[in-house]
Image (cartoon, rainbow, N blue to C red; front, side):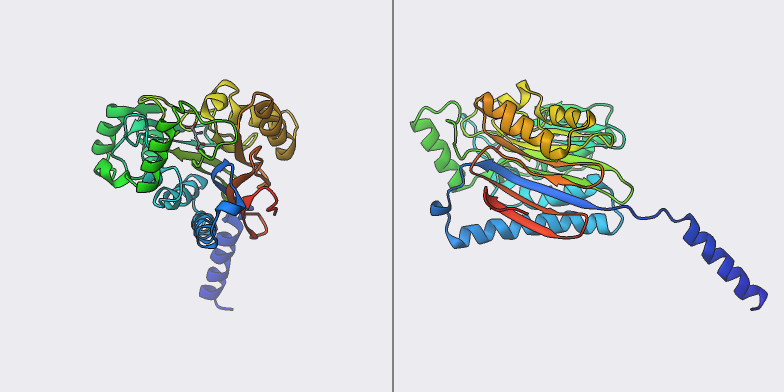
Amino acid sequence: MNLYAAALVFFAGIGIASATPAGPIAIAIHGGAGTIDRAEMSPELEGAYRDRLSAATQAGYNVLEQGGRSVDAVRAAINILEDSSLFNAGKGAVFNAAGQNELDASVMDGATLNAGAVAAIHHIRNPIDLAIEVMEHSRHVMMIGEGAEVFARERGIEWIDPSYFRTERRWQQLLKAQSQQAAAPPPGSSFYSTVGAVALDQSGNLAAGTSTGGMTNKRYGRVGDSPIIGAGTYASNSSCAVSGTGHGEYFIRYVVAYEICSRVAGGASVREAGDGVINGVLRDAGADGGAVIMAPDGSIYMPHNTTGMYRASINTRGELFVGIYGEDSG
Ligand code: ASP
């Protein structure tokens, strides 16, 4: 071997030795929990839900596979759900009592505990992007309403006319809710279809994000759990990552996402913590809901106390699971 070849081998060796070994990656997402009745679901509609859930999971997973950050995987997955009219986030957002679409979102980085949240916004196509912008480019954690939208303009976030969010299906849901004088969804309602994601990247960092239109016929100015760090979203590399969906007022009162992670920090598995809070605390309080939970080793649990939850995951073995009904398991 001449000197040149020997040098190449030597430097290639250094390159290999100094590269960080790639850790396990995983992602889990939800598109809302609620009464999901098989009899009311056409094969076409079910196929459309499964297609979007699978595309969103795969988009997030691709980011992780390429060595991207868990925050960017969460964004990639949520963007696909926000752009679909099937889910109550972005394009498919529900209407408030004033006939407006008022959107909320939040994100948390489990490595740094940095977080970003926005609430009551009307002109941003992908609210999760603005939440990430608040986290990464402001001194604050949460911005609301007009101020959040001024910040969005300054940062060059895509600005759209609110008519973009208007869909006939959601409009009819509002009219129905108003004719029933429903100020809040009755137990077992099918109102919840917020979206969210949790992910683990190759560097071992967890992240969580949630995006929603809130609840149909909510009072203007009402803010639920989805943009509240600790209630609808939480991530810490030392415990777990959680994104929730359900009756937001209860998720706030019981600090659901943080409560799950604090149980994991105390030694519970994601299954024990998730069941204890979603099927224990929340159920006892009479609240509907579900969550996607990920531990620092990439293990996933997706509990819900409703008949179904739109959900999907790719685990650390690279296996894709898509589920809708309670009996779907994987
Ligand atoms: N948690 C959301 C809220 O209360 C609703 C949902 O999950 O669909 O705003």
